[in-house]
Image 1: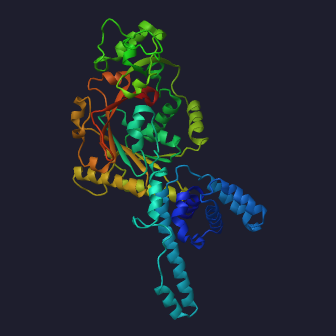
Image 2: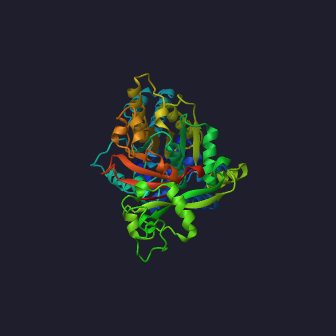
Image 3: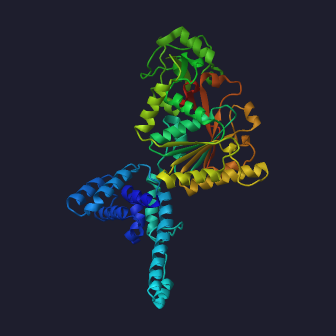
Length: 514
């Protein structure tokens, strides 16, 4: 499978070819068919200065029709090309592929050299074999993990730094996207922190699904919080936007974004959609509506005005200032998720669109970081599945490799998760429980870590999930994100992005605003 990974790199990635071209040696590829395909890729790059991508199909047909391919190779070569076509990848993991290719090509180079030495020994040419063995120099077609600023290869690394390697592997719209997206890149280790029952698992699933929509391959490790059946049922609810239980069938009120000036009739902009206020008679002051507004107020307002009141978020000022408040929109849900609809949605979303999402479920108190590594290595070896995003639900349930005092064991786990993101050059996402004091707070701070504050040292970013301690926001479907730790750039842990959600329909994200 490593040879196939190398060939996929030559087909897909101009940057990959740039890194290996200087001392590329076709003989290091053992498969005759893959050797031939590699030659075509290098030939194409030398002429057009880019990887062939899907042009490889045209190259093959030209070679076949011109007789450049031996007749006894045509059928098997076409089969290999069909298999490789399924691995054309918009999210090719360049750094990981270079690491794996470097180790493999150096090993193959040494093996071939040893074979030549052995051939001379078998032929009785002992002096020649000794001389050949003593003159061996390791293969250097792929740069090792050393950055030499005086070498021209650094220029390629700088170019890569500002292109695909900084592309988010999953994205959110609006204000939440501005907070999260640039942290969701290769090599990052991102965690969510929340008190119990704040929807951490919902958010990890939402992020995983959004990653597949960006063509990222996702490995989701369930560490004991849910069974496989529970996880699959939640995915079906997510895709169908229907509840998993008849308990939530009927009229459901889903929160939508609105402007507080619109609700209090304090807007005279031309962009305003309606001219009816949601509240009058001085129920709320402009400055405190977000602190006092509750679900009962919104339901009463909707029953009073119905569709005559129109929520509005049209102006640019709404996107830039903290003017957002929820409004409720009724949705009629006739039934809970069904078998046939769930199967249809799974087929449409994942199977037909070839979105790669694997779930590995483990009983509580059994999953280790080493197990995660071994499973990923096994998937790569068996069918070439290399995850771009690894999700662990959640880190506090992982088991340490060695017996240590609990706090130090937690530190070791988080340190190993950071190493996992670096070694595999992927995004690692997880969640962690906040401390007992968080139940009495409306906004998490850095003192609300559980067990060991060194968690902050290992993540590249950690975000808090916040709801008021009295449950007012939870009833309305309101969640507030804040930045607890961001390794790159400035951050303000008191600044929040409000997210609207409806977990009964499987959706932790409906809309957002400042």
